[in-house]
Length: 222
Ligand code: FE
Image 1 (cartoon, rainbow, N blue to C red):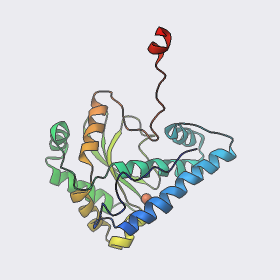
Image 2: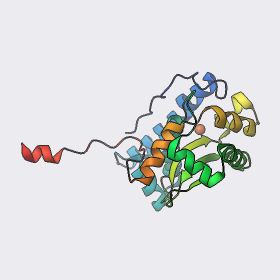
Image 3: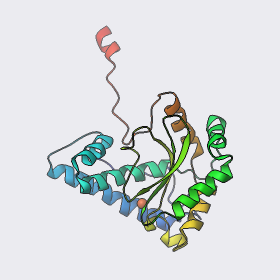
Image 4: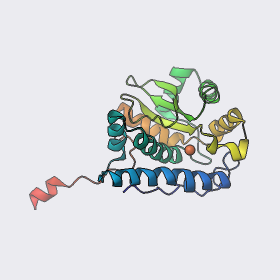
């Protein structure tokens, strides 16, 4: 059974770009329902996997659209929460250099991100990802489409484009939401960790975190 993760900050921590009220609906209702539906579908199938990533990949390859949509949305929202941080600093170090290399500067990345998100038809997500060459790209995906099933792409940050993410606070002004979001809410420290892991074959963020590997050395020494 997968568990709805707690928010890593208070409900009102992202205001005024995302209000307390939006966060309560978004996390406590929408995200919770994706997690519960995933568990229900797995329970009906008699499955109890530990890895949500494995569920998403298997649902994709077997064409189980309902399970894919709910499991991917459970993952995407967990990633979205950690990809935001109130009052964080801008990107630094290698990530800053990669942004300059791919886009020119942070303002140009913002323009591209906002344009991709505001121009995206219907529901979905807008991401900054690192590709196999460790170059950065902006990608928009439809509905529950995720990055778990995109080989070679490591997500650094994401913003939710579903109306439930912004309508209470910004009504139909998705562009205004994205501009405020990009200026105030990306967790660049987390993005830098993801970028570093992608470049150096480190631990990419997973949800839920994998169970600790048994300490074989210690076991055999005992
Ligand atoms: Fe959402």
